[in-house]
Length: 129
Image 1 (spheres, one colour):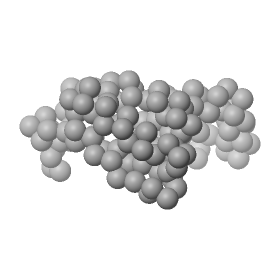
Image 2: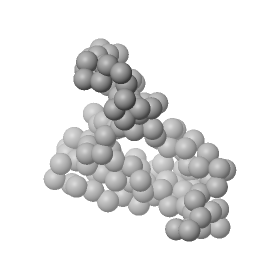
Image 3: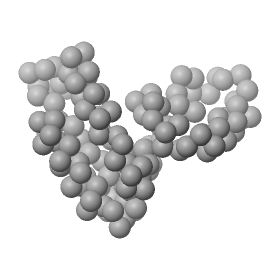
Image 4: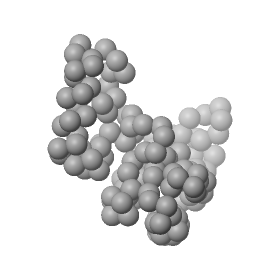
């Protein structure tokens, strides 16, 4: 599940792009949203035969395919004026896009704030910030 945000004026465009990505990669994606604030939650649906049932985690192959599709779909967020997250933050799955989305100056400021508040790196280690 994703947590992305776009300006409210671009919601319809974002949903259309998600549908196009879903069709292009032949992966079902359902989108729920907080339409009032531009927050979208596209959910990639994986075939249970690939190991995505509640009792079995997705297989490595399944995670790889979904990850590649997710990476190919990421560039539209900044183009629509969006960002990686609206409410859940940036962790392991999204850290590869943080610098690109924030830009080098804003990313550097956030890194400096993190270092000032956590000089020993003990708070939430291994995450994006």
